[in-house]
Image 1: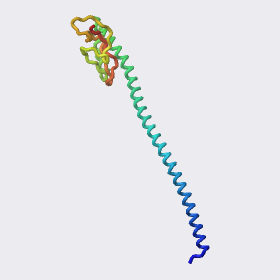
Image 2 (image 1 turned 180 degrees about the vertical axis):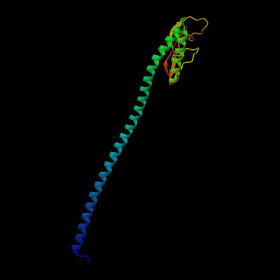
Image 3 (image 1 turned 60 degrees about the vertical axis):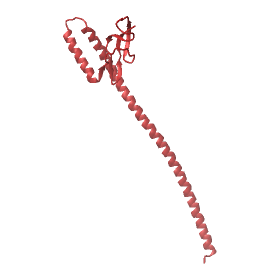
Image 4 (image 1 turned 90 degrees about the vertical axis):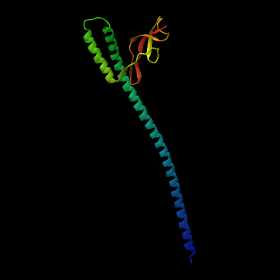
Length: 166
């Protein structure tokens, strides 16, 4: 049989164990809450990081395009000057023609494409610089292409400058 002292001792041990178990459970709950908070912070930080990476990649792509487009616009102005010079009778016409072909080759290699000539005026592709009387053309159609237009990577680099029938 168990003595009264043994019973009290067992009861005291049980209470100590229950107190220790209660403290451990409380610590475990605190740790689980902290873990959940850190996990949530990590997920938000990861999402922010992923968004920042996508934004940076897009910004970098746009900066590269802008830099290329700036240079190509300058080259297109030179091409337009050559086209005008070739339109006049001059002694260096063959040299101009050769330079013109070289410039067009450089632009082609860079991905610049000429906008195809169309009959109907399209404000996305053309810039109307003159409205002219043209009885043989329908109103709103292109009468003459004054300067060719160009695309670069599916975006309009410079619109075709045209005269449009009234």
